[in-house]
Length: 204
Image (cartoon, rainbow, N blue to C red):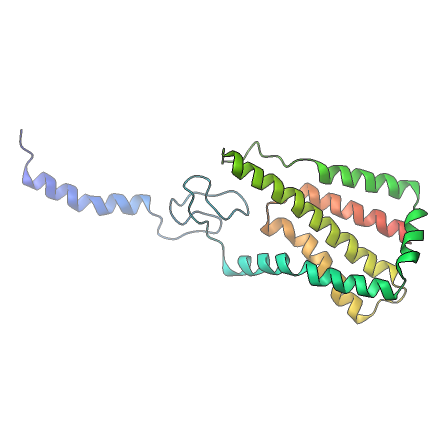
């Protein structure tokens, strides 16, 4: 039976309306630009369709700053700690750490070594899950290193100068902000804080 011409015309007219229903009018933060679904927290690629996930510009700027800032800040902290109090003094303080500080540092290192929980992840690809585990592992290590270095710099120097504050505080800020822009579990932030507290207790 032939299809009436007016039915074809109606279908053609309704097609754009159907497309508008499936295409989001605006993209919210953390949602896919293609399918409009809410993606996983801090991810860049949609786990459902593989398209880009939208984030505001300040989010990308913060991500790049946190990614690039630790290296020069670490070099600056190393130069300041070499001058005062010196690596031998820090080594003596670490060797004479109290038992509670040693226990706290061991617990923090154990938490950092735990794998990330990916059971609730929307993606099922092994490569994506492996990248998520590596990001959590290495990101947590850098986070802990920033927290420990910043804490040591602000604690070991007898009279903190403006330069030590300009290096130490950004390091602590990087450690605190990393879970907001990278797929680093919040538990690793707690481990980094515990490790920094153990080091500070060893110095004081």
